[in-house]
Length: 190
Image (cartoon, rainbow, N blue to C red; front, side, top):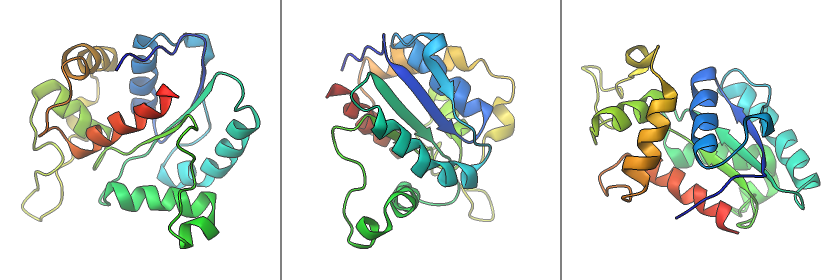
């Protein structure tokens, strides 16, 4: 799937600098212009969830323009679906209770939820280790790769993802949250 983000204004709501740097590097590889990428104020998963309804409301006000809202939040110890449900609940509690979609298919609002943390994606991209999201420690918790990728060049990882993984198609055994991210990118086809 060829995606060209040239001309789009992109707002990014995410937990930390590693997420922002990775998302903006990937967006630039897809044609986005640095000056049109905006980081919205958030610094952890609670503030991402808190600011999400306002970011969506603002996005919807200007939906006729070339704008995209990209959200990234670590799933931490939750499933992707549990994390997505939190967004639905924050955005529209009534629809959430009725199990209805709170985002329309045509809306360019994308939510990425790496299992554990963004560094699990970094680990997969760097090593092709398909256990990146499922490997557990001796206490049964999903392994965190956070300390292994502190000074990593996210531009290189973004380029590797785009050129070596996405172009060839994401392998079936790739992390489930990367598969979910690819499905979210389909929202940009409209």
